[in-house]
Structures are given as C-alpha cells and as structure tokens.
Length: 85
Image 1 (cartoon, rainbow, N blue to C red):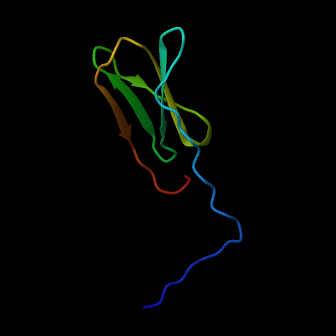
Image 2 (image 1 turned 135 degrees about the vertical axis):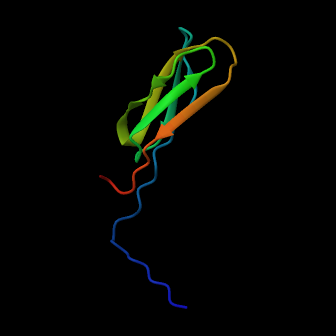
C-alpha cells in the first residue's frame, strides 16, 4: 500500500472556536454555528418563527433570540457546498 501526502509548507489553519449559546445581560441569546460551506442556515426555536442565521467571520453563522427559558432548538442547514466557491 502506498500513501501520498501533499505538503504545501503552510501549517493547516485551525477552525475558529465557537461559543454558543451566549446569554447576554439583557436576556438576548446569541447562537453560533461553524458552517463555512453552506448556502443558508436557519434558527428554529419552539414558539418562534424560523429566522435566518447571518454569515459572520470565518464561516461562523450567527442568530439571535430573546431568552424565554429552556425550549427545543433546531438549526436547519441547506445547500452544503464543497470547496470555496
């Protein structure tokens, strides 16, 4: 068995750290998801309408909601793409 490895000389970049959820003093909650190669991501909390998560830096999607106690959460991801384009 032969194994080939391509060394470009540059070290692999580590993915950014994602803190989620983040509860703010004013009862807002920020949700983050590392999803650099997708077209759309939606935040769906029970009792709330589906809300798009905006594209942030380094492929991190960001969504916000008001804290209303513990409730089910879904994150819907659409259009996974391969590569950078």
